[in-house]
Amino acid sequence: MTTAQQILFEEGLSSLTFQNLAKKLDVRSQSLYNHFKNLDDLLGQVGTIFMNDLYQLVVEGLVGLSGKAAFKKYAEIAHDYFESQGRMVELVYDVHNFAHDSSFYQAMARVLDLLNKLVASVKLQRMHDDAYVQTLISSVLGFTLIEIMGFLPTDPKQRQREFEELLTLQLSEIQEQ
Image 1 (tube, rainbow, N blue to C red):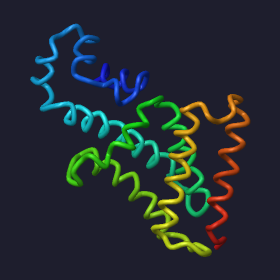
Image 2: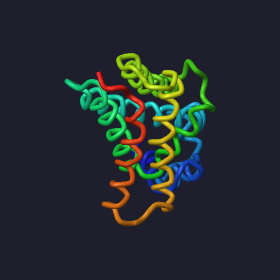
Image 3: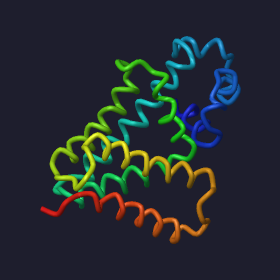
């Protein structure tokens, strides 16, 4: 699993094949079938770990927070986590290939459910709850993906300022209570 995660982190989703993994482990690719049904099984297991780790970070980070502060913290944790995981973030874009009852899909659903619970606890100015969740997730994931691809300024302080501006815009939808 660690070697598979390393391949994903450094090289991305398309580089994780049984042949590539076996080569890095110095084993025959057929022996990987003793541990995984197929490549999708391996990706599902790595994806589940990836999302469970994020879930745990978010749960711990939200303790004692509510309202805008909780949303801001959720977005910051997700952004920082995705940014720290290199190209493993590509797993998020592959979750649609998994059945809704798969552990990977369910782990992602738990992360999103936390956001849904936050939305249910506040009053939005104009947006419907579902639209707000989709917009916030799209903003954080989109920003992070563009960041990983190298299309944002190279200065980390400038990128951080731009991310904070994105969050400020997102948080402006939440009514003060």
